[in-house]
Image (cartoon, rainbow, N blue to C red; front, top):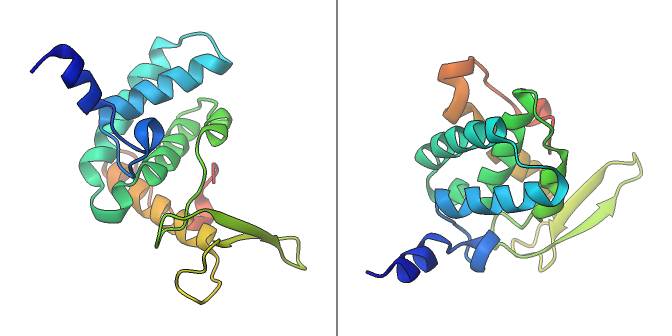
Length: 160
């Protein structure tokens, strides 16, 4: 297989080519490219992010292996390690966990913002942001609980 073919295979995914799952290499390449739009290169951050991505990708399976969940869990991990991860929100869009469609946002009377599926795929108008937070917290906990002792709930997330 040529290097060019290998490179194309390694960069398939939502953040690169439209699929829901990307390889660890593709996610890190996207991460680095996006980071360098905001800041100068940071080898310590890159080292920590590749380690975290490896753990997340090994832990994730099924739906929680979608790029969206891995990206938010990575942002959470980096924020908890003391890195700025705020910039990461500009490079991902939450999607419906059921159909991966776009979300529509509504502000409730209590000033809470919810995200509902734009196509209402489950016909229940439920808050998909909460579902996303729960999945991210679960993935994060499974990937890092052994090392950090953290068992996160959706309410504990600092990044989403």
